[in-house]
Amino acid sequence: MLNIVLFGAPGAGKGTQAEMLLKKYDLVHLSTGDMLRAEIARGTERGKLAKQLIDKGLFVPDRMVVEMIEEKIWANKSAKGFIFDGFPRTIPQAEMLDRMLAENGLEIHAMMALDAPEDELVKRLLNRGKVSGRPDDQDESIIRDRIVVYNEKTAPLIDFYKTQGKHKPVKGVGTIEEIFNNLCAIVDRVATKEVA
Image (cartoon, rainbow, N blue to C red; front, side, top):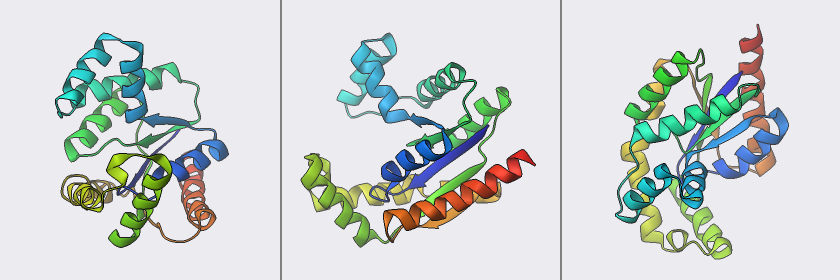
C-alpha cells in the first residue's frame, strides 16, 4: 500500500495534480475538507459539531480529523494506497497521523511538496477566483495572508518529513503535464522501493 502526502501552499496545484495521480495509480483520495463537508451534509453528530466550530471560525480538533481518516482507511482496506490532501497541516497533526498509521501497520511513504514562488501562487489563486467565484480567491490581501499562515504553521512539516527521509521537493512551475511527470517519477521510485 502506497501512502503519499501531497503538499504545497495554496495555489501550488495540489488539487489538479491529486486528480491525475488518483487516476493513474488507482489511489484513494483522503481530502479532509471533503470528508468534513460530507459529514456536515449528512448531518452526523460529528458533522454538527464540526459545523458549530467552523461557523465560529474555530478549527475542528485534530483527533476528530484523524478518526475520520482512520475510518476511511478501514473502509478502503483493499486500496492500493492513499493520497493525503489537506492533512497534516501541523507537526502535531503529522505526529498523530504517524501514530494512527503505525497502529494500523501503515506509514507515509513520501511527502511530495509542490513549490512555487509567492507571486505565482497569488496569480493562480486570483485566476481560480474568477472561475470558481470563491471570495477567498478574489482578494489578494486574503490570499497573501493565507500564504503567510501556510509559511508559519504548515511549511515546518517539510523539516518533519525531511528528518524521516520522506520529503520529495517538486518544482511546481511549468505545464501541468511537466509537473505531473515529475510527481510520477517520484511515485514510481517510491513504489519500487516499497515493493522491493
